[in-house]
Length: 413
Ligand SMILES: *Cc1c(COP(=O)(O)O)cnc(C)c1O
Image (tube, rainbow, N blue to C red; front, side):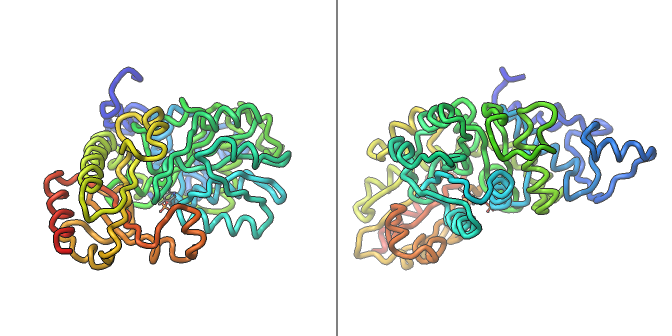
């Protein structure tokens, strides 16, 4: 099956991996919270992990597990677990795996809400060092004896810094610590986190994977590369069976069962349907983004374009090595000083002013006064975010229509 193309695999994945009842080609979205056991020994065996099965909807449902299986196959992992949102996946993972006093090396270029979560985690006793992940030396310098993991986004939102995942992965392997990547901005088939040495992949399914702005979801995938026997924080109760499953077992038990950040069956179904066209949409959106970035880069009203696909992007060369099939569908711009970003956004007619990413529709938003407002000017500067930056999530519209809309808006100034 792995020899087949990406989209072929996607549209047959649910049917082949999950074998839905009655020959259905989709796993049913079952809303039962409880599961009956005709023989009481059955519920005992499932509770004790001797038998696979569902006992209660907060811990697992057929719909969420079916989606996790599909995403796991996509990433080539050894297991996956779905969450209610991308933030639930990130917070569930961190709270499940780390303890007070642990040190974690974290990218200084982070999605705003993740940055804010890191502040909460340091309030409760994790030590977080924010480093420039475009520099392996910076990561090496931040390492301490109590460092438990490195966490970075593949392509940072919104200023598009690209981390050298392969180099960081190799370093983490030497140190026997997991490399956790947030792959929201570069979902498969753009980026193969396992091939590049990531141990855990966390992603917001709300964005490109679901793709249509109609469902929230998140996922953690274990690529199977990390040896959990080297990780001090796995509870004895979860050190059972295959050590490759230890990390994910603890994440499931803590993140879903104890914290309750569970993906709803309806959302799982919507995400699975959206995912069927992930390859097609990424191809179209990445091509649109590349062409739009080039158009904007050549426009005299645009001062700067941030897009890894442009030859003058500071990490273009790393992006070229580690991203296949396109450089993503998000770019950011700074207009020339004389143009007010708010007036410019109001001049766009097709493009929607909204905070979201990875939609079929092209979206734009002023970054500093909205999603990074809480960070303050100093923090924004450190993240490479200018006060006038506009983030653009490029959709799958016909390219000419996008260029026409940006062109007419720029010509008004
Ligand atoms: C949106 C986003 C998240 C959070 O995902 P939600 O599903 O909205 O909770 C996490 N990381 C990145 C990089 C994102 O863009």
